[in-house]
View 1 (cartoon, rainbow, N blue to C red):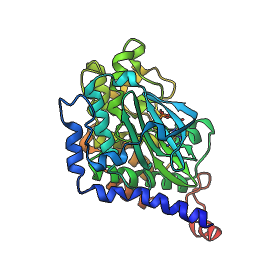
View 2 (view 1 turned 90 degrees about the vertical axis):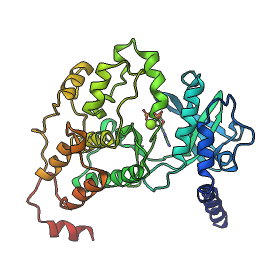
View 3 (view 1 turned 90 degrees about the horizontal axis):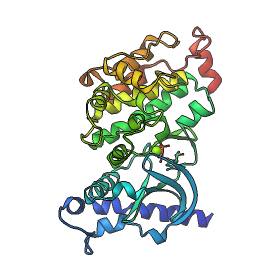
Length: 346
Ligand code: ADP
Ligand code: MG
């Protein structure tokens, strides 16, 4: 047990640089955006070096999976970690490398129990990787779409509340997730952990590369895109233009996750991308006629999916609405007395 004690103590000390670093974070952030520096400066500030993990220090394990712009491996670095190795092809130009470093500096600012723990990054090309804590649980995607797990209303609400807490924190820090989806949300012993926030712009170059194959849109991604993003996909070459991601577009994506939690499937299921883009761009929504849920539950969905971004609630308001949902509502017997089910739990 003394071993486990010292292990947890060392984990704690690993985290302390966040506080230390706040003093000179401005310096290091400026450093990462400095233009005209072809190489990573040798005398970079201490804080930056602390997050820079030499690639050789990482013990790489088995591959977990491949995403849009890199591959995730199990790894060892003072314990179990997840290593997201970026596909360097996409990072060949300096500007994108700078962008990557900026995104990493964004990552460092996050400390919240519903956000994956950022541990460091390898930032020396050609080895670019992001090291985070390893999630042992399943993603919401696996729960909902692969295992077809059914969450009761309490669990559904609780998961949504935890997502909102994490997202509210990100937004308060001025960070837009840009890729909120059930694949980026882990559930471990009932605790929700959100991953991959703020990394989306690294993927921009993938679009450029894959333009030819049917819009280059990965399956299961489209239904998270808000109307304003859909419309700009439609109108421009995606790699020419920044897509109009915003806090409100994150809220739209949250709406889709809420729908997945409630219905066990994605909106616009089975429809071709072109049809979805057209409908959403026109302000049409997935009908909710088959969803058996209260008015309040559906209202949350409809508000998050508002065509007008400014009409969408922020996460503070969403938390408020989620808090107000009745605690125990059994799907099959809405008339089930609340006090009975409560006493059964205690
Ligand atoms: P996507 O999010 O589209 O699934 P990623 O590249 O983010 O693509 O992830 C690839 C695989 O690695 C996925 O199976 C994902 O669940 C897994 N993964 C990503 N981050 C972690 C993590 N921190 N812990 C455990 N598994 C992870
Ligand atoms: Mg991911």
